Length: 470
Image (cartoon, rainbow, N blue to C red; front, side):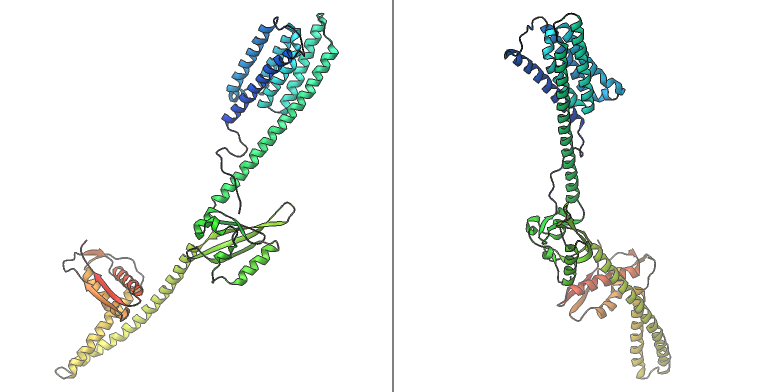
């Protein structure tokens, strides 16, 4: 069974984490936005005639206050990371400096107190860009308290101000400021949560896309909706070739239909299925996979998709088959060794009695026949020695040898091994140099090469063994 996930593209920033550059950019943008709003709104209200007072008396003080305030916060933004390494109590210094500047401004130019709400919101936007809701509430309380203290001081100096009215305005500003700070803080949290969720989804997508396993996702009817790149690399099918089809396109005749029926019954009942398939690639090659198929449920527990995770074990299966074959050959080698050893013992007796018979029939017609028997026995004894050499396991013993002689020794055994349709020929260099090698291993190499060549020529052919200096 094979099953999918669509994922957004990757980003370089970790999940839910803003880089130093991003944090500095946000602080500067929020601060400049607040300063711009304050500088634009106050003149607009004056031009609209909502307040009528003279700016000439304190214009220079207002400009100096704004300039001082702007420079201070600009330095604070540029050095914010270093500033955070100080004692936490120093975080209140910039807030207190703003409160002192504005309250002093109100005391020096009482007419300018109508601009206090705008200054309040300017600094509120500064704080929202830098810190959290708790700090915003503390700043609002300190700002309102400082403002009321300045109003009370003006009243005691004989200025025509209504403390109750100004207190009401300060209270409304405090409530509105805290409300605005709450809304902005929640919006920022939602934005950070959205970034975090998007980044988590990107990580999940990257894990699926870059997984070394074959991953397939199907709908509840078994139609493929997603395959990862590893699936395409292993099977040869591109995503557009399998989307909408069922995993049955990979089915081979070696996998019984009962296995697929059992899989479908288990996963549709809500269980997880584990097993092994012998599938078939697009080019027809076998593909062995160890598969795990499980249902995907929504929040209500309803199955909406099926997820298949598969491991390609084709190479493992190939190695296991080679191991089994090697074990069979090892067993065959032990059998051949035993038979050759017993046969060699029998030949020893045959050759011994042939020697005795030759001594008794010297000069008789039977002497020539016994010589042929002795020659055949000697050849058979050499053949059994070769079989014993091929079948025994021993350490390599390199010696200086003549490869031509090794080829001639193998030829005797080889002619009895290859079929009659394969003609064996030799082309040996008479000036061949000596070679340092293990004799038995060289014989085994020649036999393996020759047998492989014989197997490749099913219709017969010509097998040429050649030696030359290189």
